[in-house]
Amino acid sequence: MRYVVDTSVLVGSGISKEIEAGKLGDEVEVIIPQVVLAEIEHQANMAKTTGFHGLEELKRLRQLEKEGKVRILIVGERPTLQQVRLAPGGELDNLIRREAEKHSATLLTSDNIQAAMCEAEGIKVILLREDKKEKKRIQDYFFEDSLSVHLKEDVPPMTRRGTPGNWRLEKISEKPVTRAELEELAAQIIEETKSAPRCFIEIDEEGATVVQLREYRIAITRPPFSERMEITAVRPLLKVTLDDYAPSEKLKKRLREEAEGILIAGRPGAGKSTFASALAEFYQKQGKIVKTLEKPRDLQVSPEVTQYTALGGDMERTADVLLLVRPDYCIYDELRKTKDFQVFADLRFAGVGLVGVVHASKPIDAIQRFIGRVELGLICRIIDTVIFIEDGRVEQVLSLNMTVKVPTGMVEADLARPVIEVRDFDTGELQYEIYTFGEQTVVVPISVRPARKEARRKREIKGIEAPVEFEERKKHVVLSLPEEYAGKNVDVYADEKYLFTLKVNGAGKIKLRKNTGYGEIILKEIEKGKRVSCKIT
Image (tube, rainbow, N blue to C red; front, side, top):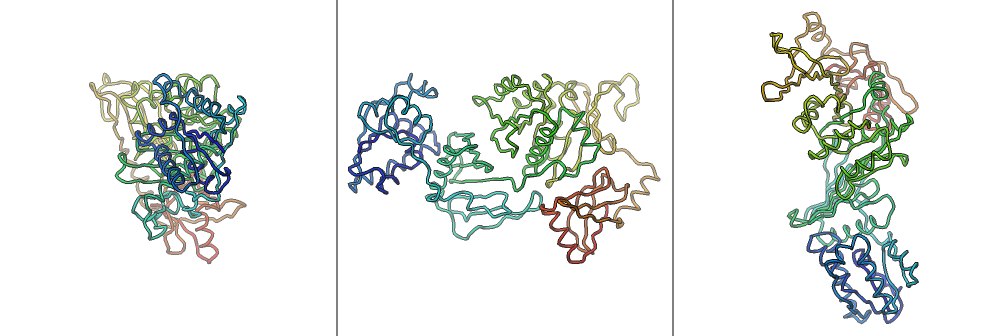
């Protein structure tokens, strides 16, 4: 039997296994076009994972030829520069089909489009599918409570287990991972990503490949980008709703009716993307058309929410398309480069409701990242709400407002100027002022000295045990505290044992979902007969 192979089957490492299993018949002749060799060589020179997989498969085929199981024939000519430029339009795939037609051979491919074109042109074709049972999967390294898996050449495999803000790093085994094991796993990941639905290769650069394999975000790195080969996989532990964060009715009303320029800020791994997913679902259930801009596309959202990536590697081009589909809200995950902030601003000025995800160690840092990238007077038109996430919970909410006033600390009336006031959303307390001073833009923290009576009251209740009412609902555990504890951070105890620190919502309640770590801990302590109490931190 005579077969012509394309790049996809060599990259996917499928043909050698088919030959060894005897599925391609006797006296197998494999024809490899020079076009295919050129593609694999180019990818390997660019240090792309797919190129190395293709070279390994070619080595296996040569070994099978030495064993007398296959005859290999290399045909054709290397593609011209013009043909390479036309490759995205399918020119190289067309050259491979012409070789199959010329040699009256069956084309072997793992590419659905290539297979469909062969059928349309009357060329015999076999579409090789992935045999999942024979593959070692990245999912096999995850435990039920694993947040991420870290596999590095010559290092024991590691996993991060727990919940955001309460995790631990553990060894999966004492045996170091070998380069061969990583190469095999990387090949499986690439192969599955190309053939499975809802899977994408988001980045494929020299020494680095990032794929979205369903809910798993996987980064594959190799020299020269990293000193050794490494595979890192991250997944969301659970899908939550906005109600799981126990937001106050005041905040829900703002999100529902007023906020249109929202920033979700927090440190890496704090739970920003999880909250963004919950917010997307919240808007979708409000009857809004919701889209996302992501690279990679790792938000866990319902099918009604369309996920876009950078069109041609440029989010600005994606924004052009986005305006044509007229969304009510768009989730931008995440803002990193100056171009991202400019696209975010342009979409806001176009009237699109936006939720941006940004890395920040403090809430004010999220706002400061816009300073210098957009004019100061436009910031309040772009951002109206900042939600800071820490350890998987809403730690603080800030609201922005532009006014003309004499900045705090100045007394002369002629020093009045436009000032951005940054206030705590729950208390209304002024926390920062942003304005120009000379040629500089300054962010000034405002220290408000409380009245003696209020200060004394705060000192009296701090550290004092608060009465707690416990309520178990169908899906939630609710701790109710007095009104003066609303918006405060409290330490939660079971008898004298410290459990964790949480923030009380505006209604004086702590609402925990039963299937989360916090909810499970509370229920276990209650079942043991422990008394749950809270103290202001």
